[in-house]
Figure 1 (tube, one colour):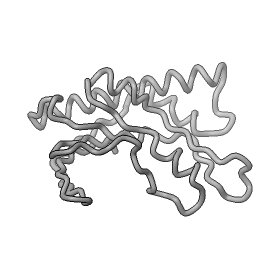
Figure 2 (cartoon, helix red, strand yellow):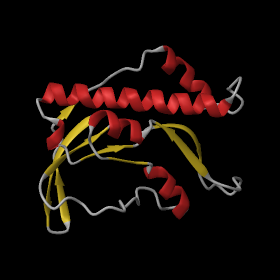
Figure 3 (spheres, helix red, strand yellow):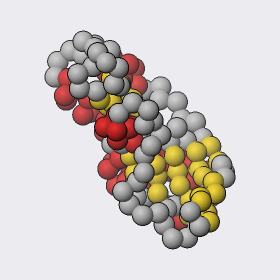
Length: 156
């Protein structure tokens, strides 16, 4: 997880890494998650299992944000946004063999936003997949950037 202050300068954004933190996911939940990544790795209701893992990861990421802010001594009100990639559990990019390319991440951004009180932007890779090959890192948020200096938190 990274805490990155930024300032907007004309069409450019200046970023500077301020703080980082690492929170290992050594929980029963984390031990189940690798099975989500493997075709046929789930027993029982796979939709329920993915839904539970999505929420659990969102809660863990929200906890990591709270830890990072406390460690950095920064109140949540000073944070402009959280950018959360989540955790990829399945990635089927366009490769000629995949009829319907997709990517799936867990780490419910709504849970992160609700628990932290900070706007959370997520689901970056799905747009890349929709745009097709060669579009990696092409994400442009649909909301305008803040008009002044702020701070973002990017779970990594």
